[in-house]
Image (tube, one colour):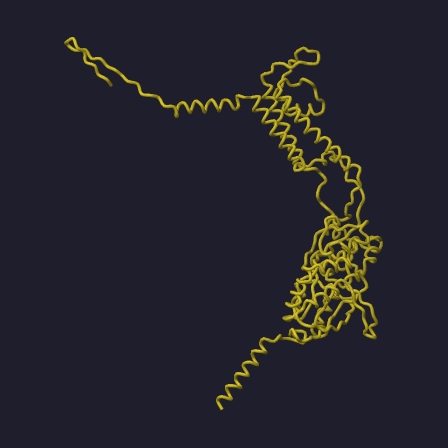
Length: 478
């Protein structure tokens, strides 16, 4: 009897161990490698941006043909799972009357769907009722505005070709060259003029700054006498020639070339001006515009496709359209591919994790799908899928060429750092050669010190003679 009870107890423990090791939750959590599981897949159905999810079919017959970037990524992920999967796909229409139609779709997990596939953005508030996989494409919210063609010209345009650090560097190197020439020419009493007579006007401290500039603009022959001074002047003229040519070319481009500038640089200009702005129907961007960017709900207008974006921006805020479109970067990239010649991406970026697949909370499938997504994104298959739907452009990454750049057109010190270094070293080298006293005096001091402390001086011998009473003398040697 005891033996039978022990056997039953052992079997019971084994059964409890198997239950503990088995996946928990609904049917979507079955992860046996040799068992096929069934997944109810929900996908968003909308009119615009069908490169991500494109649903074609009759709802009455429940016969759909679903394609798109997100669907193809999901199919690739399924092939990397360690178990077989049977899919039952059901489209869900995104309702434009809701603040976020995607939130309504996610809340149908797990009652109606086991997994939601599509352009679902991973957000912190959504993670409270669903689990997300790792993102398979980056994202973030920015705005697209019309571009303005024009030239930025004012009374200070002439200083724009060079940045402030370059102007400061020119003043410093000119002062250094003026001081060097003043030192080398300080012993020259007079300089010959064109008639051969003496010019009593000497190089004085007042000429330190204007002398290099005057020689760059109106060079004169025999303005300096010493060869080292002429060498320094020649190096300076070379630097001045390069700087003047660069200044002329950059100033010409600033005055003549047409610059593309965004009509609005930031959100504050739109909000304070009372302009209307647009967003994608059913997107969480609606909540971002109200809570993060502090727009009035009455100033927001929803649109479904890139063509509607274009029509609204073309009309403008005062004619029934909008002044800017706010959406996630992947959608704006697609829009700029089609209408990019007249629009530009601008403003700050509201960051988020990106697009991912949604599953029930605490689902064991999340880890399997995340590992499979990593396998797909690290393979060449992901590049093939992106090129198929978006071309060779990186949809998930931000290209600086498609957004407004705040970097100045001015040339910086870094562009001429090598030339300034050569000029400085050449001037210092010529100064050391011309003024030998600069380096000879330390050498003479070093020699004097070496004689004083290092040379050996032999001690002298002193002889003292002491007289005595007799004829002999006492001699003392000290």
